[in-house]
Length: 225
Image (tube, rainbow, N blue to C red; front, side, top):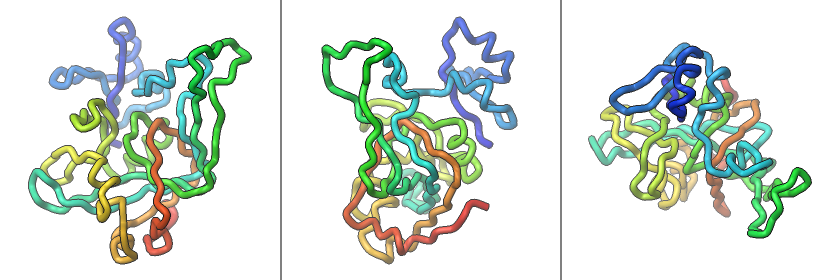
């Protein structure tokens, strides 16, 4: 398992260290090193601002199972092909829809929003945070899917990095441009993608996109090893 960066307040650094976290002086961040149990340190995993809303869910996207997507992309840094990863969610996935009422009373009986199922398969991008279980799964496949700052969106999120040179590979082109690594426009392009079904719950703070034709039936699907 690759390292996982944490957000540890200064006042809690000794507790995090006692539970196995380590300090990276070059990046000025605490992290979970390889071989250390994630669970005791889960409280310091990065989360989005939604998690700070009283009574709001910790994660705003959920699914009963999911697929790890593996594709290939050109690297802008070294011009070589590299493997890249994302997630595909089934039709049963749900997104938490926050009510946009500035006068909403955040009392114990208040409803901040509701879970909605749109009934379509979705591809995940702009991942602010993943649950510990999903984090462990993606690190079975790659150690190049990690937090980094994106100038395009002006924030940090979990993104791919080139397996050859380490360059950051942001989500925009791969997810939003036709023909990108996760945006197939033909059966031939879809055939380069492998989907590994993970029979565990998916929880994340992220965006979910869909297409009228996602060429799912042409992708290579297999069960988790």
